[in-house]
Length: 439
Image (cartoon, rainbow, N blue to C red):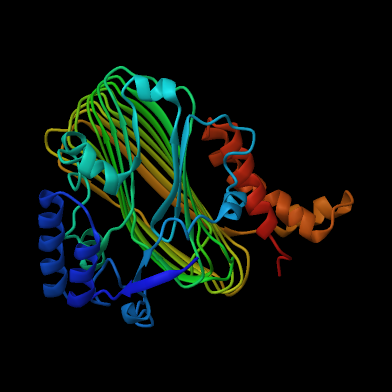
């Protein structure tokens, strides 16, 4: 793959990026505004509550650039072998991305005939502005911090899914995002489901080298209209020298159903904000999270379940296991607005620490402004039970086999909530591969 030019994340790089793009004026205006805001912003303060447990002093943006790629040169066929969620799955469409460059996109003709749109966000913003413009940056906030503003200014490639009113996409759609060693990905994923629509989207993020370096400045926007149903799976396995900064948000309306599954096992440092806004009565969200870390990985996920309408349910469960000298940080919040009476909110984070040097920070929280609600939260942190290891070894298991069995059992509650067989099996296999001897 050849990289002809690399744009730095500065004014000259921004102007060069705009010159290389063919996009509508309204999108360029959004970019310019985001870049102006990014230039005016400082990097996050270490003393800020959101960043106090995540040290980014070693991160240097100047080491990374946004490459201009020739699509003919970035078609890496072997990258499809990195994907784990699609084995035995009949897909309705797929998009392949390498370093932010769309290399392949396809959609079943029957789905296209029903009005489903699935492809490059950059291209569709030009060809279908009436679908993209009303929703882009409506869930995502470019002013959240400097990373978000830089993403909005420099986003490249990206994926867009639009499902019209009442259309059911009966086969999963797949997005594969690939980073080469030292590469940069600034793709933006936008999903819009109209009233009564249904879809399943599988999104995998991988590096070509498990130990590869790189930078991901990304965002996910999920917009659901009344009565729609979405199953969204996001598997993150970036290389272990990759920085991963992302804003991920869903806005779900009346009587919507969202099952959002996240698995985070890659990157050197991750700082992800994930939130669900329940804005219509009867909306229901289920968020399932799996984190498994090793080496010196640092994964920080901050989550928000924001109840803005009455009679909504949010069900949140994250489980994390830590090996070696790795660390996970989870900071969760259930926020209930005054109008959100009859809220049913649940959040839980469980941690299994697999070494004496690993660490898990877990900070659940509630902010309730309504008086007719049921909100519960909890957190646990523990080590592998030596009695369980002993009894397993008495029955012929090695210590490693026993540990793997215990770790798999720890995550089983998450696996039982996943309704897609290929996802459940792939996550179980990925975690089992990484379990080493427990000391």
